[in-house]
Amino acid sequence: MAGLRVGPLLRQIDWETGERATVWVETDAPCEVEVRCTPPAGAPARAAGDLAPGPGGTARTWQLAGHHYALVEVAGLRPDSVVGYEVLLDGERVWPLPDSRFPASTIRTPPVRTEAGEGATGDFAVRVAFGSCRWAAPPAPGAGAHDPIGPDALDALAARIARDPDGERPDVLVLLGDQVYADETSAATRDWLATRRDLSQPPWDQVADYEEYTRLYDESWLDPEVRWLLSTVPSCMIFDDHDVIDDWNTSAAWQARMRAVPWWRERVLGGLMSYWVYQHLGNLSPAELAADELYAAVRAAGREGPDGATKLLRDFVSRADADPTFTRWSYRRDFGRVRLVMVDNRAARVLTEGSRSMLDKEELSWLRDQFHDAPETVDHLLVGASLPWLLPPFVHDVEGWNAALCAGERGQRWARLAEDLRQRADLEHWAAFPASFDALTELIAEVGSGPAAPATISVLSGDVHHAYVAEPDWSRWPRPPVSRVLQLTCSPVHNSIPASMRIGFRFGWSQPARLLGRLFARHARAGRAKLSWRRTGGPWFGNQLMTLTLRGRHARLRLDQARGTDPGAARLVTTEQRDLTPG
Image (cartoon, rainbow, N blue to C red; front, side, top):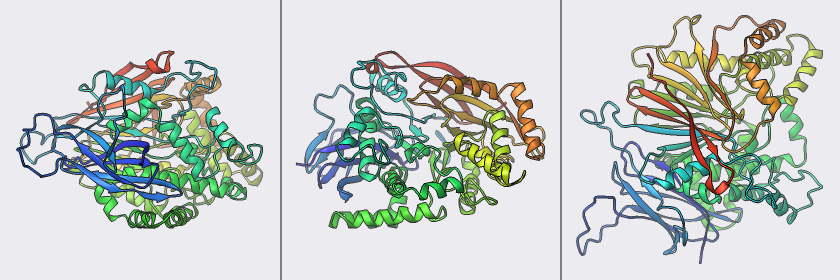
């Protein structure tokens, strides 16, 4: 009998009709997967002899690299309802788990917006929780209950929802990168890796291939609290560097060096293949999945035998790694009048010195189209980018200085020194791609202007292992936006930051740091930037999540930090709340 290996993960809720959802699972054998829903609360009892099926869906698993997966479309849901669900494999119930201490996993559908009347002006709230950088490893053997990097914010969120399952919860959980750490494995994973190969040989105790990536997802998503949380709160995700390797795609020199390393090809292909299976597919709507030729081909090949689907996906990601224009990992999700545009700022990079950009031309054009599509239907625009757009000003200036030197502004000797510094000091954020920083800034200003501009435009980011709020000063801008524009950075979910970096980030916002940054800019022969910005909240350090509550043209931000010494009793403590509504 087939068993449930990973999942279920509730990924998509159809906000246009309120009638569909998607649920992802991994099983340990081929089988028929069924998601069966209980009747919505308040629904009339079904008449005797009524054979019409209730809400639910089925899908046959497909095989890839010896693993079995299914993404089930759940149909027949009702708008503005809550239904419990269970998962059956070949007719045998496998979820909820026996003796589970958690409430039933549920699917909550939104109200359906109408052209007029109730709901037409956005009178219901959309809650978006977000964060990044979750090192999922449990405490090392012998450490007892103590977790040296503190309680996991996702565990704490799960505990909060489980205590009050009918209370407030996010409508979507946005995970902004580093869902797994391929280059920083836990003691338990290292022990498992040692049963497969000699860890004294490259890539040592880092993961090497697709099979080893599946171990990372097991470790991350089988955490009991997180497993239940992801089964009942919809999620969308994007990769960042540690999903493949620290500072992935920093520069052309970095890329050339890594491509010469014998073990690198299997690593990057395994990372992209596993991302496509475990994260990317669930980001797509049922309509997008139905139109995805690769998804159809992989499913068909994966039902015929063990090797066809693996080759198809391997060939696909090989081309994607070689050519950033080959595929698009970015995507868009609309939640009523809230639009999330998730931007791939890792694999879409053009790294050739002299034409470096964070996004290739096609990607930037796509981004512009998503920003400008039917602006009258958008009250709040969220831009998901794993890397912050607005960094502490000193860090921004140093990265811009470094980019200019690497491009040869001060000659080849400086260029060589700057490239070495770029790779050693992780100077590869938006500021390290000045033309792309300017392009994103101009696009934000453009969409934030005019009578159809959204009330707020928020760039949601992580990566830097602390949280802060920054706001641009548009006083020198030719046409300042009317939208309130914010950089909202929140990380880590579960990780740490050295004391030296805490000091550095605090210093980076100070006035002396701003003056020092101008000296760097002068050395790079950079003119005065049109845009400046200031920190209006933070920095906050710890394991944490931010939540945006968006209702009509109003916006409110909350920062919750995980507290507690016992991982089984982690709790979220609200440490900051503020109104973000313009004016």
